[in-house]
Image 1: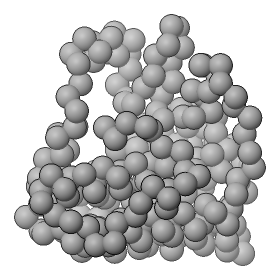
Image 2: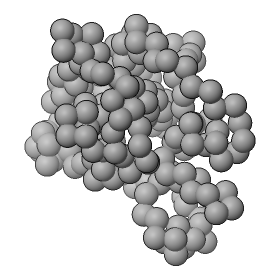
Image 3: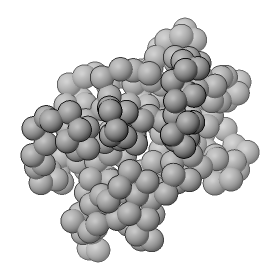
Image 4: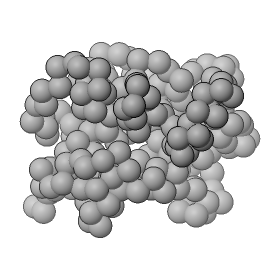
Length: 217
């Protein structure tokens, strides 16, 4: 979806260069942040403890399905331009997996910066194709599962500094999961636009319990 020039000007006038962003009066919420959005709009924002088994299951389901769909993409689509942000499909598919990786990194270093959200595929895994992106995704999934269930599992209550404000490790891992789900839905749409049909795509029931934006783009 094309961004309205007036809206972009308002963001720049406020010194904001990150999307998505929600502006309501004097309040600014950066990123898709259900807790802060609930506060701003006066909704019930009672948070529940992280359902760890469900989170692990959802990561497994979503990242495996993403790898399966990406593995179907012909190599010539690496340079196909995603219509909503003019981003190459290769970079987009890498980014789908990279957000959970950056959440894990934030736990180690204590900070999740705006730069973490937009790393270049070429800087991280090189000038590669969809096969290598899938392998990267498999590595990310293995590290996520180890981090959530291994002998040295994350302390999900640990607080981290992020470009969206202070978050617990559990909140950041949950946001990363929602990000991957949202992008997987978009990937299915991109495949449809190009006449490609994913094998055994996930349905809405597979995403139950994961907070994602209501709009696809």
